[in-house]
Length: 381
Ligand SMILES: [Zn+2]
Image 1 (tube, protein in one colour):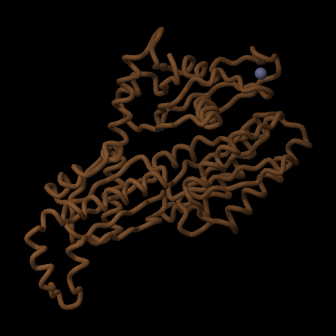
Image 2 (cartoon, rainbow, N blue to C red):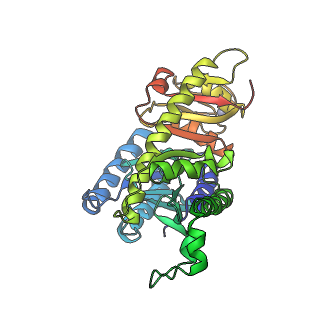
């Protein structure tokens, strides 16, 4: 089943909250793109990773038996339950707790099998962040369209005809006499059309919660349209792409998605520079694993900035949410046993999700690398 971005986000949050005190929650992420020979490769990969993981963890016979059943669920999902257009699959399972869930994405995920106290949600968080829903306003003088695009496709299209077009006989192209006089006021009509489109766009953004808009228009028309936008809406236009009458909607959406991606990376760069200036006492910036984790645990992080490729192994408490980079046998907070985790940044991401923090994922963002690959904007100084 392919779900909406908002439904996926809700599900992700509840998954992030599941904890297994024996550390046996299984997460499998796989590329299911047709480009990869995944149907052949995935079962072999999962079985060999399973053998490696169970050896490393020196599990009891009973624990291994439980895990084997969880693996069987993953294998069944891989073999029988993947939608053809899916590019990436994530399966989360902890049979004893009744957790058996999967998410399908239009983006390849790295092949991994993880058995840890919590679900490894980071790859899905990243994918949803990179595929964030956006809107496109395709604007001309008299005929415009608004598109809402989720991570998969256009989910809503609203075509708006201006007064000029409405008054013309579409079949013959004839213009009635009274509209002939109206043509003299065409500038006013165009402005009227822009106002209507602006109102519809504002409504669309409010109803969908979409944060970024791409404007598709000839340059002068784009400028005219912008002048009619309320400032809150104008601020959400992050990119402009040229109006191409020959391009199909699908082609336009591809161009628009690339423009959003570029704008998003530029915003993250700017935000990382802002954080750099706001570090230290009294500032609202934080950076580096230890400081960011501390801020997250105190529920102080409003926006987490994370480098997509920054992963670092660490240790995690089986009982509470403590995580650290140095190996310790007992949790420094609650003295319960700890377990190794493959990606300590994944824990920071998971905790941020639980607190409804915003997560921005950057790739090759220089200012973010300079901050140690992970940084945060605090809710208060
Ligand atoms: Zn603990």
